[in-house]
Amino acid sequence: MRAPEDAVTDTHTLIENRPPSVATLFLERVAATPDAEAYRYPVPPSSGSGPDGWKALTWAEAAQRVHAVAAGLIALGVRPEERVALAANTRVEWILADLGVLCSGAATTTVYPSTNAEETAYILADSGSRVLIAEDAAQLAKAREQRAGLPELAHVVVIDEADARPAEDDPDGWVLSLADLEKRGAAHLEENPDCVTERVAALRADQLATLIYTSGTTGRPKGVRLPHDCWAYMARAIQATGLVTEDDVQYLWLPLAHVFGKVLTAGQISVGHVIAVDGRVDKIIENLPVVRPTYMAAVPRIFEKVYNGVAAKAREGGGAKYKIFQWAAGVAREYAKVSQDNFKRTGNASVPFTLGAKHKVADALVYAKLREAFGGQLRAAVSGSAALSPEIGYFFSGAGIHILEGYGLTESSAASFVNPGESYRTGTVGKPLPGTEVRIAEDGEILLRGPGIMQGYHGLPEKTAEVLESDGWFHTGDIGELSADGYLRITDRKKDLIKTSGGKYIAPAEVEGQFKAVCPFVSNVLVHGANRNFCTALIALDEPTIMGWAKERGLGATYAEVVATDQVRELVDGYVERVNEGLQRWQQIRKFRILPRDLDIEHGEVTPSLKVKRPVVERVFKDLIEEMYAGAREA
Image 1 (tube, rainbow, N blue to C red):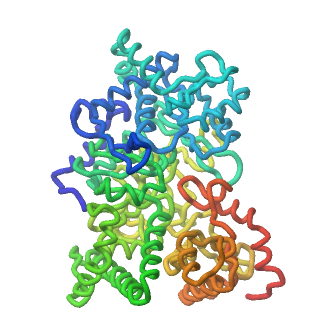
Image 2: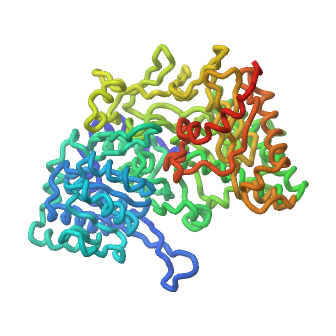
Image 3: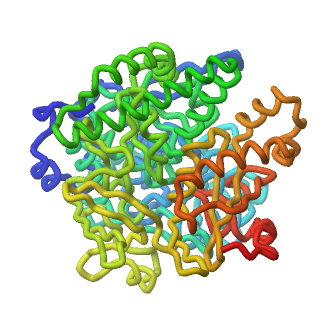
């Protein structure tokens, strides 16, 4: 999984000699490999039906469009460090527009397309964005709805040309299409051919490049200020790990408004590999065999859904098929644990002959088909943004799909830790990226320092001072442990640790992870118990999986009807009992409720990166929680 040592330039030189900006890095990449493929993106069939085709952009072709966007923004009067907001799903135009913003000397304000009109307006106003690059009519409508409160917003550029129709009351020139912007830029370049390269040459490492607003669980989101140097450092540090080479094909579906998705585009420029871009989550399964990626990044929920889907398909195939799957899953976990342990002790990932023989049989029966579903070429997948259940990680590892967990925050430009290639350890987030320092505070909090750390929160010096010390140490709010050889294990969020009324501390994420590992029907689970005398859980089930199970038994017509049945409650109760067997008494789930629907972005219960907003969920389902504790006397 790891590139040969001679394929990676001296790490210190690579990072210390980084360029001042990603814009500079992009121009260097274009000059070095102009005719190499840079991006691949889906194109709907002209007939309107059938599978998408895929089109490629070389670095030179991408640069032509990036220069046009940058020059277009300059022609609109955008000045260095002024903000240009970008509200769109993950697509190749997002990347080209972002690079265009950076090459114009301006800074990108990222906005999730799922953000409502009111909060979009807050982000645009708080950031002082001068231009909004909006994906379609829906994003344009939000700007129109809030236009009166956005006097600084001079223009809206719409990516989908058919939706870039000015309304009767729009100011003259307020709405234009991305194609119009590029045409305007091309004309400006004819008159001022050096306008973009001059802007790039003038960029400083400490100049603002990106404002990413954190999806807070309470109150308004905070704008995280990330200068050009953060991205240039990340790009070089990713290259220095050797996990990705110029021959890789990366499949990118993660939201680019999120720091996890955006850091991948920076690393790609430094390494020079291909990115296949398509943010449609419902197309992932369809796209993988077509793209055949060698490398991809995802959040744990994706791996959980794949695992649950495979388990459900095996169950539908009958008792014998399901027993084979369960046996193969057990072999995969044992194989992964033994091989990783042996590699840790001896540097050799060998396993006993008997285990190896069982693994070979299981591979032919189960694992090979699973790998083929990922395209058959996947060397490794990086998991981040939330904790991956170790049992899920061991399963995929043993099946030949190596999931390298990583760790970082918006405030640290996403990538602070990642597992090394062949020496990765499931259950940890690996080692710090070259150039990043880490220490564990007395209370267990993880502190970070390095070039990837933010400048601060936009316009919030007091909030900045709460987490960023004068000597550069950033307080992550996460609790963790460092091994003697530098591997980090995250145990919980500092603020999410709960203390029972009996004085016992519980890490709910640990219990939730164990439940996800044993229950193939779960989608989301939230353990509650702060200031209570026992723990309870709110459980949301994966709709396709539980509905398939229910159909075999003639239960209900809708998800809400199915999860309300005694049969489903008994099913879930069995998994709760299994989890409780491995927990301390004070950690055990004494009562639970199955939610009538899954947690979702629309109700504000999960972030766009699928993290559960614990306080929001506890507020929305307060009655169910109180119901579980009503009249309770259990210790």
